Each structure stands twice: as C-alpha cells, then as structure tokens.
Image (tube, rainbow, N blue to C red; front, side, top):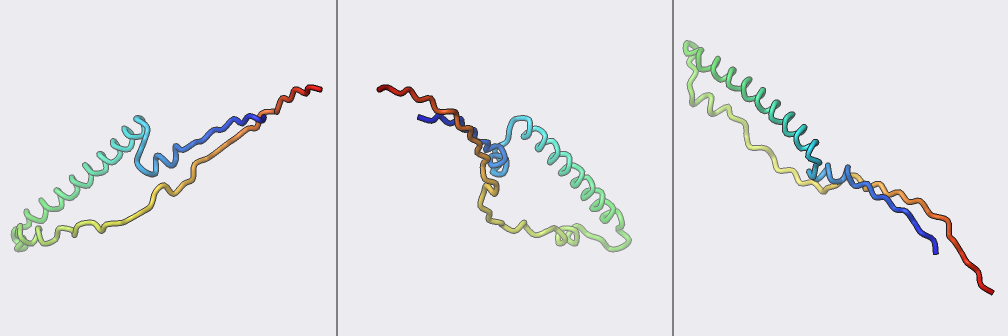
Length: 98
C-alpha cells in the first residue's frame, strides 16, 4: 500500500468569492472606507461650489438631474482560480512472507 500526503491550498479561491481571513477583511474594509470617504468629500465639495455659484443660475433640481444612473448588474462565475493541489508519495513498505 502506498500512502500519499495531500495538501490542498484553496486560499485564492476563497478570496475570489469574498471569504477572507480576518486580517484581509480588516485591510479591505479600511481601504474601501477610506476611498468612499474621500470620494464623498470631493463630491460634496463640488456640489457646494455649484450651489454657491447662485449667480450662474444653479439650482438643486439641476444638481439632482446630474446624479449617476444605478450601476449595471454584472453576472460572474466564481472562483476563477483553481485550487493548488500538492501531493508527495510516501515509499511503500512491503513485507514478504514465503
């Protein structure tokens, strides 16, 4: 009988479907939060400047008309990466009897 040592690394597959380690979840959440906060600050500053320029005839209705459309729905099949499978065959030990 030959024994095998099998190791299956699915970490990249799990990351692709959103199942992250606690460290990765914290890092990703911090990055997304910072990005969203900076985008919101920039958007609010632009809207404030637009509304402050009252002499140009700006209005809240014009500002509301410029809001972006909802994002398009994208369908994807995950994961894209196959798991890494490693195996090491152990030498067989035979005992012969005559």
